[in-house]
Image 1 (tube, rainbow, N blue to C red):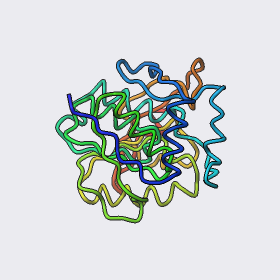
Image 2 (image 1 turned 90 degrees about the vertical axis):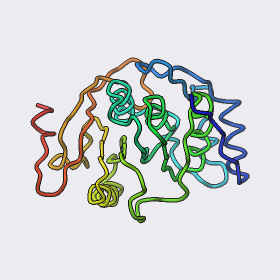
Image 3 (image 1 turned 135 degrees about the vertical axis):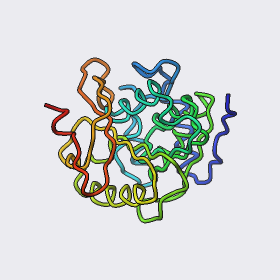
Length: 235
């Protein structure tokens, strides 16, 4: 097993975030993902206090498992050959769930890209909890050249129109560099369906709902000029 190492905590925001996560959130198994445990919010956590700390005020999306990320994590665990021996980027990593699943499935190395400071702390804590090594990438990668990876796993990155366009532009640069791109999503409106080919389907909870299930897909992103099959596979 790879040795997990908690990334250094550098700012007072990160220090307070680590303390909050350790004291106010509980480590719980992720439904449907054997062997993976994450720091998870409860009604008593008071999570918005952390979100507002230091003037950050960002919604704590990272504290809950989203449907697309759950589908991607299930897929790489079901089909470890997708990532085994390969360098993997978990894009918009949130809690780090997808990257942790990739590491457990045998990825040679896992990089997590996440701009939320508290989420970055959670990724480090969750990696240690699961006994895997995950390397955090500094800053926002969307304006950068493609990283030196073989696979990009992008769970729930098309949740908003303003985010969808730069996200797709970055993923197109990855495709042009020969990187295989998988997208996990329950079919939200900004999803570029015409560019997607469905490779797997799962019924999973969405955004922390432990009971209700929603259909979610894993899609391969196709280059321009290669029509996807997302619409046909969702009928």
